Length: 319
Ligand SMILES: Cc1cc2nc3c(=O)[nH]c(=O)nc-3n(C[C@H](O)[C@H](O)[C@H](O)COP(=O)(O)O)c2cc1C
Image (tube, rainbow, N blue to C red; front, side, top):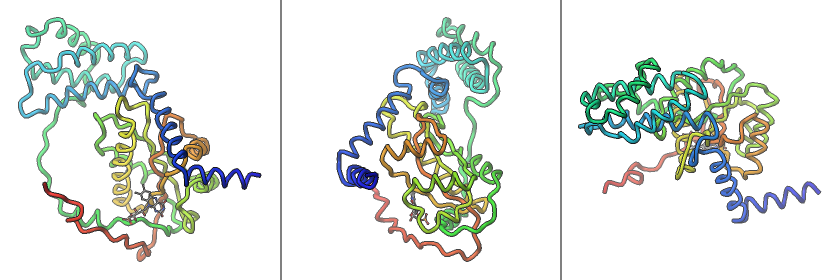
C-alpha cells in the first residue's frame, strides 16, 4: 500500500504540473503567514522592518550629494516603530545602531531643527534615550585590487570524497563570520546556518535529500542554510531565495578559505518533503531551506568532477 502511495506521490510531484502548483501555494502560504507585508507578528519581523527603515537613512547619507533633510516621513516611522519595539523588547544593539544612524543624519543636516522642529524633537528624544554604538551611518571605502581572488575562486570544487578528520565547529563559525558579509536586501540578513554533527541525524537528513548517493556517508558534518520568511515583505517571496543563495555562495568560499571542503546538496523537493526535513532538522516553519551543504576535510590529490565552465562571452552580454 505504501509503495503505491509513494509511486503516486512521485508521479504527482515529479511528473505533473499540479505538484508544482501545490509547491507554489505552500511557498505563498508560508510567505503570507510570516512576512511583514501587513504588520509585525514576530520580533524578527519588527527587527527586519527596523533594519530596512534605518538602512534607508544610511543609503541616503551615502548618495553623491545627500538631499538636505531627506526622508522625513521614513524617519518619523523609524522613530515611532523603534519606540514601540523598545517598549516591547527593551534596549539592544539594533536600537543603538539606529541611534548612531540618526546621529549621523543630524550631523549631516545641521539646520534640521529649524526645517522640521517636530521631527527633530522626536529624533532627539530617541537618541538621548538610546546610546549610540557607532555601528550605523556611513563609512569610507577605497577600491581594492585583489588579483588572488581569481585563483582562489577557481580553486574551489565540490568535494564528494571526504576523509575522517573531524571538522571543528570553530572552523564553521569562522566561515560564517566571513560569509555574513554577503549583501542582502536592505541589509536584513535573514539567513541562518544549521549545523548537524550527530551521525544518526545527519544520515536521517541525507535520506531526505536526493543528490548524495555514493558519498553521503563520507560527509563529516551537515549544514542547512535557510532564510527566514519573517524578514521579508511585499514582492519579496523570491528574495528569500536570492539572499539565501548569495549567503550560501559566500559560505562556500569562506569554508574553502579555511581548508574545509563542501558540496552543495539541492533541496529541490516537494513541499511535503520540505516539511519532513524541517521536522527532522528542528527548523521552524517560517524558515525556507535554501540548500544542504555537506562538509568535511579531504586529502590532497582528491579527485573531483571537472565541471567545465561555459565561455565567459556566453555569459557576459555587453549592450
Ligand atoms: C544549489 C545547488 C545544489 C546542488 N546539489 C547537488 C547535489 O544534490 N548533489 C551533488 O553531488 N552536487 C550538487 N551540487 C553541486 C554542483 O553539481 C556543482 O556545484 C557544479 O557541478 C559545479 O561544480 P563545482 O562546485 O565543483 O565548481 C549542487 C550545486 C548547487 C549550487
